[in-house]
Length: 155
Length: 478
Ligand code: HEM
Ligand code: FES
Image 1 (tube, chains in turn yellow, green):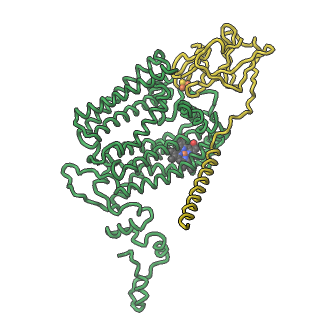
Image 2 (cartoon, rainbow over the protein chains, first blue to last red):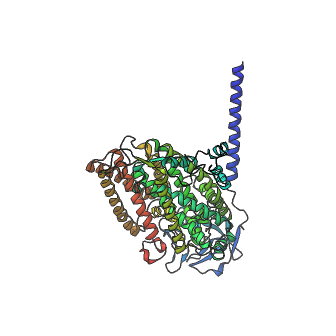
Image 3 (cartoon, protein in one colour):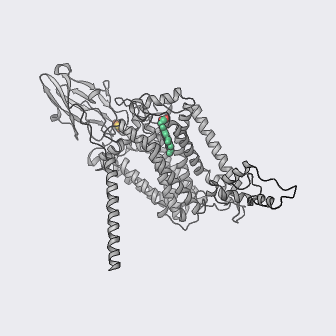
């Protein structure tokens, strides 16, 4: 009787300590977990009138962190400016007609497709809407892709 | 026996004797009660032993140490040098916290303020910078010494593991400190280094968000890095260090080298005080002087204010991560940032447990023949690494890309397989040619890998110019 009670009391205590430890760990882990991304960024970015962009041009929008590309055939692409390799900002090199990443020398063509490694995939894109003669970019969702194909172009 | 204070009692017992010794002065009594209760300048070994045991700081050390173990060229004082640099970091770091503001809008300006408006601000910041960089170098050298003299077997096994942990902590310190100035250099170095985390399979995205305290590097990142840098890591470091020193003591001090030719074989011991203490004090002064001179001559770098819209060309990680960044140019990302570091860390931690405890140890490179083999391994590693890097860099635009399964096989599995094959061949070769023991063979393999890593790091730091193309150091861009 006595030893039995001791044993169950001990089990009870061990259980309580385990629960308390678990709770403390859970609180600490939840506290440290990164917060949800800010939802404050404006979702729809108005780049300007469709006619304002020449065919074959690349226009940087620093506020939206993207490039608006108009291909030779008049179609639009919105490319996220971060290199898919490690996140450097890729500048457009007009002379070489390509994006050249300063960090590890990745290169992307005007559609964002990889011309030179180590970037593992093309630049990410955003959806584009052409409304009332304006180019609008939906910045709320970034799209990753494994290769360039014509369906990604808005015209 | 000057430390036994009987004088007052005796003086009280014989008040009538005119020539009785005077009772100790008030100053002397306060000193005795607070500090030593013994001689200020000990004259005999007995006094020295007393002082060693009865002083808080000194009592952490033994009274006597093996004569051969304190030979300078046995350890080069590298562990002590690390401690000195850490102390300098603590002191200068505390001063810096008085002027620094961990908020993106003002961080850069506050560092500029420390440099421009604070008396000796440039010197203190320079000392913090140089101590940090020297510390990484010196700790790696310390680990190399322990490894090459075989000081990680038997009772020292676990202290090797503690040492690896300490090195990681210091890397975290140096890395979190790197972001604080919030200039172009620090912002992009941290972007790239945390960008590497995204390649960890499955957990990559969340790991990266934890490291950046958000999706992008911003105010929250800075606060987290600042807190890690100035409180969390230093606190852990202090405890880990204390444990490290305690285990050195419990293992009977550093490993004792075998006698040199002509040296007596006996285990002669010398007093810690003064022989070792004086050497350590000298080393501490020399290191402090080196840091002050470097800080005064070169200061600490500070680029332009961080600009998230423009990566500098080339953008580089801190130098101690440049080996990884260079690997990324050549290998598939999963190979470069997951497989290689994970295997290397695991091997490092397990080293004491996969080598033999029974072989003789203590001499540099273990034996003359093992030294030759290690030298050969280093030469092969250095030359082959260069021979592989240069054509790979030249051809990289024509080699298979990193994407897809083919990329992983061609730029990941194949090169790693080749490296593993080379290591096995090397081990067999040196073992047969030089007649090495198992531990000596492991030494040759580790020396090979370490040399290759050093060369890869040097290429990344000095021979990568604009666009990360290979360039000579004097062509600028770094
Ligand atoms: C393990 C030891 C430490 C290492 C390796 C280390 C390393 C660094 C590095 C690399 C920097 C960037 C400065 C530069 O190089 O330009 C830095 C900055 C800073 N550190 Fe430390 N540190 C250490 C300990 C501490 C401690 C203990 C404190 C304070 C309690 C501290 C406070 C600071 C502050 C306030 C800055 C920002 C000021 C500046 O950038 O000049 N550090 N540290
Ligand atoms: S971040 Fe662009 S190539 Fe590495």
